[in-house]
Image (cartoon, rainbow, N blue to C red):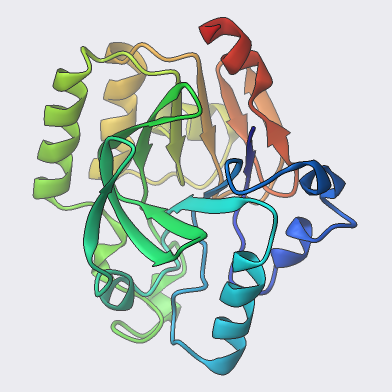
Length: 232
């Protein structure tokens, strides 16, 4: 089984994954997955508290996989060796926590996922570059080029898109603060060119099913059963 939920922000919102708030985990095992749609936040400073929560996740009855958000320590995250997993590039934080790198296509439990982390920190002017904010929050040209190459290899057809932020179009429709950078423009293009069943994203701290193809997720734990049924 695969579940999707929103930002963790380190230990701040990790309670959504405990047995009380996520009782379904009692039926899961290490062949099941929980996807975090960015702002994972538990690869930030390797503090004792952070390592405690990473070990706590390691002991859950599932594998945690995540795309990066804007509130990540990218220099530390990128120190982990790049490995191949289920068709794409990843960082193994530990045996049960996996970072899905940008612009990759993965096949997980019979579903094909395109992953593209990153977003703009709208509060970056109140943060300190290299300490609480990093310019790597927006993908590089190399990452965009790799994304396009990988989509070409899969004929621009996937089951799900997992990202942190979303397209300019959706932000405008929802009345959110407009992020207008290369990543949001890239997502505008994907909406038109990519064939997919559903797109899940976080970042905006709300749970909203926007239409039949988009879901903004924060606290909810969404089982990907409809997509699985379509594949079967």
